[in-house]
Image: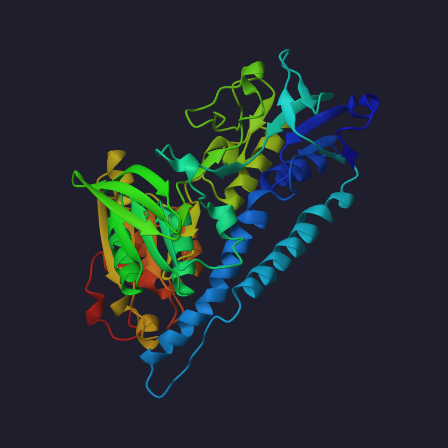
Length: 476
């Protein structure tokens, strides 16, 4: 393991591949190349492990699971003869336990992994391209035949007047709070805003989401509408169709001025949380020196083989702005590494599952109805409310629905979209069906276990051509 402040002669060794970024994409690329015998320089800056393990997936899902226990107690009232109570007694303890898990996984899945690969040299320091196009780390030259950019992303900061005068939170700092505010305004209704809103609301914080296009605006409209209703039932205020005007900090609260139907409205809370998406980490790389093109948000432009506009330089993961999921970052990075070593593999996200860990959970794969129509496909859809799902009836929790999208003539499945308490664990079945080119008839004829959430996919498939309410149990 090298430090960039070591002797120039140490760092001027030649590598087959330099990977910039030591998160999930960077490790995936480095390990993939190392397994072919390549000499790899893995260049990390900041905390090793990247977003997912440190400030993203792991801490957020750990906390979501923790606060779910409070909701389980409230949900017990659905069942006669059951009385359960639960309360939060020490939020700081929840945070400490979360951080212990983060540190444990960072050690086990990143730091302890490196010694297993003799051909990977880990270099700590900030990388950038020199005016002559060469790669440097803290002014020391790195010589590499191929380069993969995998520097991830950071919270996006919107351009709102007065924001620079406010002590705002983002998804990172919000998950580090050891003292809860009494009230919270969240700007942004994407998956980050949705998950964080439910966390804070369930521990007693008065929570308001303000958004231009509603909750999960790119999801199926039936799902966005349903989630909005479920959030309001939980006491989360959802204000949508807004334009942001300005923010201001007073002694004890943050005021957000918005425009609703052309009229100014003031929304106030103790704290403000920005959840307006992610921005690629390219600002310090000096990509222009290497002729590497980016999009308007700074994401590295790549083709389907993960190649940038400069020969020999690839990119993968959040730095590209594409499919910002940790498993897609690892997948893209593996392709980039193999292609850097001589292959010609293409990125394919046709059967990419996506999950939002709200309650109910939201999961999707493939095309939405709108996406399919935009491609000129004549589509047919089915929508199954969970009141038709035996599992939901037994659990006395019929919140949600399943929507399938198919091509009308061929009956080929194009997309599946779920909002259900256990929806995340059901989507992979739909992903496999789409991957294999199945029709909704094929899916409806498969054998599914009774009294499971995934059985809803079978019923939704049958709903294309029959009324499943007229079937007896397991008769399909």
